[in-house]
Length: 112
Length: 114
Image (tube, rainbow over all chains, first blue to last red; front, side):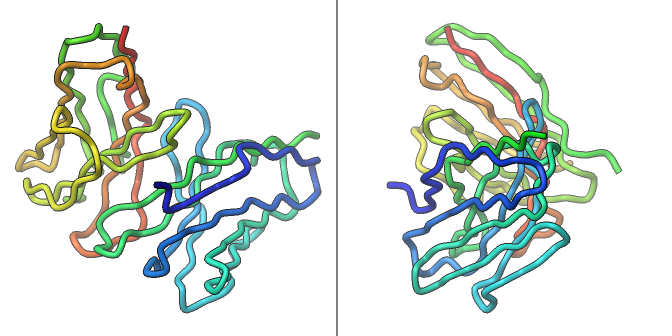
């Protein structure tokens, strides 16, 4: 049973436009969420995180929004660049704080 | 500072064999976690070690085991390999023992079971 769900396996966006990647979770006890980016043949790299005490966190072109009542978070990339093409994983920190629970990932393709 | 290293990078085994994968965390990191990545299931947590003790375990059968050495290096072992064990196995290290929320991943070991 997937506790973290990324329902869109892929997303295609033009360079300069906004990319919106979505993530839903089922466990209301999760209170910390992260986004990772993964290029082929490399391990995931941390992108941005958000605590449940916030509803928004920004870092340059990347913004994560959290809607606790809907158990939904989204990652916005503005403007999108071809180098952003990668697999994006949404993750929640488990209640013990010792493991990350990942979604299945969304492959983002940004065309120039 | 060197990153997380994993060896070997690629491995081909046949059903029924066993395999050992190795992970060297970032210097000074004491926590090591292992994840399995498959196309159908995404990234799934296997187990986490801190100071040579397994602190947390995911929902995998007993064929999957691990250990951590006093220098924080970790190994994971899969016995009686099945075709479904073909995956990318990722290791991640954490800088601290407590609830560190960011993990630094290695490049992974690609295991193919024939």
